[in-house]
Length: 472
Image (cartoon, rainbow, N blue to C red; front, top):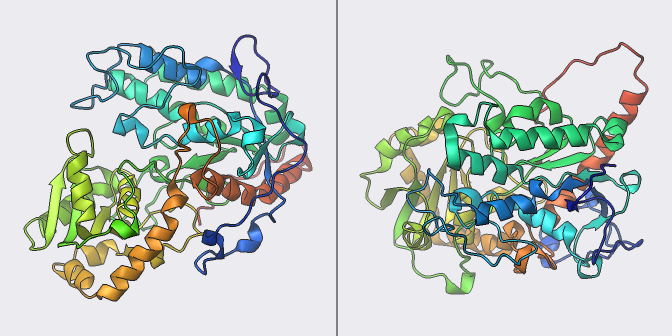
């Protein structure tokens, strides 16, 4: 296991954090009785859990990084206004042991790392609803969680000096990446498994950008695979051809797709009112790679009756506009951006606005547990770009069908909830929320991980296995 002097996070539980020897029951909610949740046999029975060991890392790589964020004069150069830093002054009590995560929407949308670690750092007696049981040693664990706030690290560097992000010199994010990888890969736990049972949270598409090849064997918690491959310049718009350059670092076999943190408040079904707009979109018009389709859709839809297309991001100035737009529209457009998905999808679900997903290469959280076709409309690039086809298709849905979609959304909104409602992310997590669903998905990978470790052990010296991409 990793050992360091000083104020570290991880390793054997200390201070007020204890580990019990028995697992805590996890009761099924109504969500798990739904006919849309399949493969229930892959989940543990109520007295089961996943055993997680937290690797020991210096505090500056997680909560100390938050302290640096709040106490510095850091102002995000990418945002027209930074809600976290008024005139560069820190605005949280310095006595907090576990600082809050940034409210800057460019960073907050990736806050999964904060809530997952917060659950593991919560005293065991308060974690009765958690599917993860924290253990004292790597030897008794199913998986080893690496408590590095990789997304916060990347976003701070991007906000301070984007030009240096892909360089190594004078790049604080690269320095932290290198420190984490050197510490983790030198541990006995990594050497035993080749890293296959380690878990990294990489929700930002560019998190750990410089060291991805070195952590590729691990279980990666990502929002999609869009930041992990590129298309040949001759490839068609949708990238669904043999010109795709295959990636060997991510796969649905070993990795887990997790939701973005939604940015808009939840609308309950009882609060739903008449929706007078057919289709709504708010976001950046110009995107790269697969997001080129967004510009083409914009040109087709911007002047159509019943359609509202607004450019911008739900920041401090546009948030109320986004809330109003999503809550008064039947459908919310979700075209691919720089990557196949975005937090907009989860904002739509929380707003009971039926998602219209135009993204041929999208990966979605918790598939196998959720059937997205029960509350979303999926449209191919080709159909979406056919003049007048999309709006005609959306108008074909009856009020009964749309009401059924919204009822289903109201049933699964909790699935994408990270926030425990407790200061510093500590305290009981939502039993049927995102963190528990993530751990259930990781648990489904454990047999495959163990098999891969055993296969590696019996391999004769000098024999290599070719890298392959198993993405579906």
